Image (tube, rainbow, N blue to C red):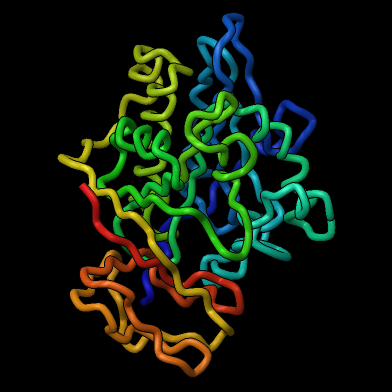
Length: 320
């Protein structure tokens, strides 16, 4: 698939500096105690919708009514390389930042992304609630990736931001920010905290900005970080209509590319449902890739980043 890239690169200006001693990270404390809420953008340098949303939050002067609010532009080094004609090249500098969130990888400090993630780590560890803003390689409806835990699925439904909620366990090639530390603890753990990752649509689709802004509005309201009246005044045009119903897509498997030559046998549609198990959808390392069960939903099929170890499609069942 190919699509026009219509999202401009935001000028961060003075907002790039942050107020924490870590470039691109802003942190605001309220007088009243409460949860620490974090919104992350630009984990990938070519995913601009989140940067537009966080920039808007900063320009609106929002402050938490209780607890604390952290707003972050994460992978600035990759963002600085952004070129709309070659936007995939600015996803990261050395390696995918959203696969580095384990103690072992963060401790190595042997890549641009690991060094940067280690600087972001204290803010992520402190957060009680996290919204991670992303966009997708291919055109398609927005998705909220909740992770495997019931509390996160319930929170995704309560947010009401998008129709499709993907319940998944992450990637074979590394841990995402959404699953790091307390966010990855099992339901019922006294230290467990909740995170959500939203894919706001295709990187270059201007609608992705509206989806990101709506998600931020709903997130700040749902967590109680900012009063409803303040959001209504400061972000009056950010809310979008809620979907009539939610569809939970439970991921039960994935295809990991063996090399950069992975290919699909035909163009696949986002969230395409394949009725019969055993249907060949791709070629991986010279071998056919077959759907593992009937009524298999294909989540985020894309070969744009295909190389050894990268997930190119996920298999999901539709749940109510």
